[in-house]
Amino acid sequence: MPGWVVPVIVVVVVIAVVAWVISIYNGIVTADNKCDNAWQTIDAQLQRRSDLIPNLVETVRGYASHESSTLDAVTRARAAVDSAPTPEAKMEASNALTNTLRSLFAVAEAYPDLKANANFSQLQTELAETENKISYARMSYNDMVLAYNNAIETFPGSVVAGKRFRPRTGFEAAAEAREAPQVRF
Image 1 (tube, rainbow, N blue to C red):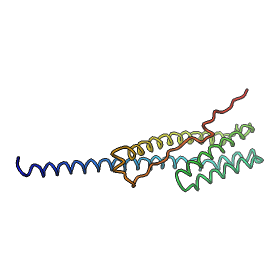
Image 2 (image 1 turned 135 degrees about the vertical axis):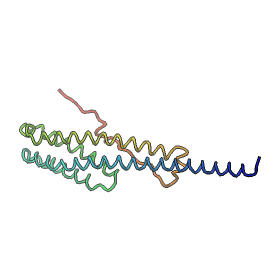
Image 3 (image 1 turned 90 degrees about the horizontal axis):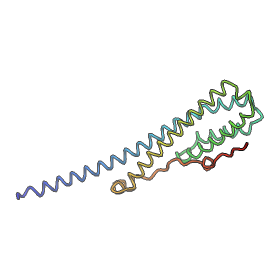
Image 4 (image 1 turned 120 degrees about the vertical axis):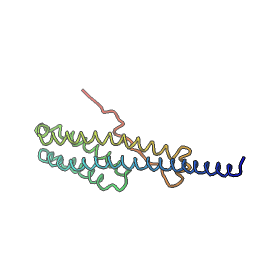
């Protein structure tokens, strides 16, 4: 066996190992970027919802002005979502806003003229569509977070990820959403 064979085999093995590590690292970075992208999709839908709420509140205010505590709660919850500094805080504030919107729609049920108002009906439909988009975006985000966390927590990704990449938290259903609604006849 010629003397150059062993060094060539060593070089080939080193190159293969380096390429393998780079591939794993790039996969982790890609998964991390997909999480960021999925969050941006949620954020865009949260902004759309936030933009619809003032019009909805004003429409309800015109018919149910004495329901100011409900309207103020919706406005405060919207502001909390808009000012949340982290994705986790925004998730929590978003769940609270969803609950206050339920209260707003419950108030609207008591006002037949409001329910018949075309502007209110259109806003309610747009808000429902946006809520559905948020729900799908949350599912996508959770899928991306799962893939990312798996990439950094399983071997060999855990070795390559080291301390640079931290696990992410996905959306969890609010406690109120886990309870079955009570229906009484």
